[in-house]
Length: 197
Image (cartoon, rainbow, N blue to C red; front, side, top):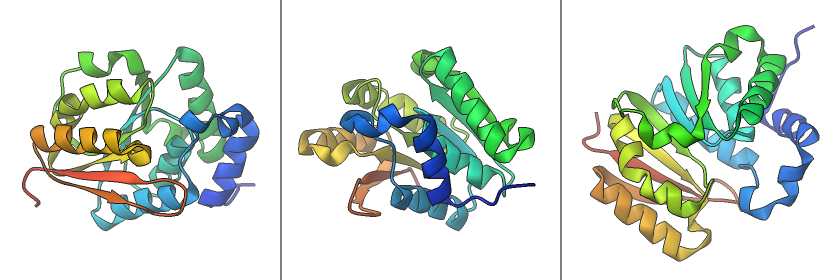
């Protein structure tokens, strides 16, 4: 029997499989409100190609979306164990067809890959460190198409990081950066590259 998922059930599924992350304030997963906001952008703008930096509950939210849409996801994640763990969770939840839509790659190779400017959206988590992610912003922006989005997860917990993300994104070709609060838990920095289509 196929299970019917909601974002809330997926968060519980993830929490039961990986309880440690829910006690780590620095690496706490995105909230259900953030997941709804993310899927809202994907659907509203009919996006189909996503790059993710840092895998976790957000990967399951993207899997939920990909199970219903024609989608391609490249997910950069720490360590072979973690990539296998997340791939297994996606396959268990949604089947091999959806799991095949997610290409897991080593996070250490993020800035080694040639940015091709073809992604509709980049979802950027904080790890391995906020400073490293800020250094990667020119590469991240070069990886998304004109009119595409970059969502920066929870960099506004300290104003210094929010200001650095905003400056780096604008200097790298984004037309604007706005800080959205989908719920009371976390924020997203929402940047849009170049001219809007």
